[in-house]
Image 1 (cartoon, rainbow, N blue to C red):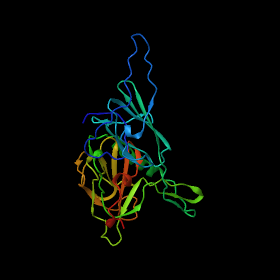
Image 2 (cartoon, helix red, strand yellow; image 1 turned 120 degrees about the horizontal axis):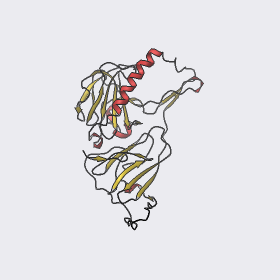
Image 3 (cartoon, one colour; image 1 turned 120 degrees about the vertical axis):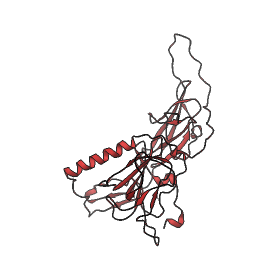
Image 4 (tube, helix red, strand yellow; image 1 turned 30 degrees about the vertical axis):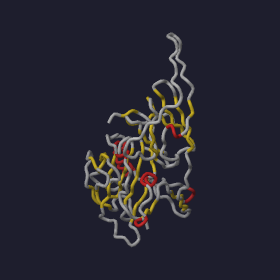
Length: 309
């Protein structure tokens, strides 16, 4: 798929959209020998980029670059956009209140969209009588460093997939036991790491999740399928949906795919379990966009009510 660099946001859906025309007239080239002075940035509204939602912490947005876009930038960082102009951009849990989306056009104009990134309220548990824990041993740190290196290499793969354009489906149905962004504050105000995804556990009155299939939420390429359980994630599968959007499925009892496999939305990638650092059977679903952790719940939408209790 031929693509240029541009900016990414919430979820790109399948199908093509009409690309917005860049507002304003093109500039006239200066006479030969005179220096080229770029025109000042032109501030535009969100309709020019066709943004799919309001920016907020943890969100993934989709949009369409204006016709004639040569470079798309989010806070001065280039992001890919497809031949039809489609792109996605993401905002992390602790994203700052403001961001800037820009399109540099082939005729030299710069279209600028200042954005307000809405804050969110996170589930914070204060455990003032509980210590965070002991310092990891050097032996564990060596093991963990090697595991993290494999995860980071997988995220940097940039597989060729159009899964990012699809409507995402739930990889499993059950009770959301831990939300994205939740955090524990231990004794003496020591903060634990925010929860990087969401946990799907057994629903009340439902059969156990142990051994049930974990499904790919969208098309993608398997960029990591561990051959042994990692210390934290257990049996881990990472799916690259394209354009920097990656899903991670953790704590699997069994893995049924291999690195390099192409998977379809709804295809089983393994069985749910409790491997790694897990207190019971559940599926941890994490998502990143270009390494930025985003909230899967904002990507996939509400779980069917019959399965969410």
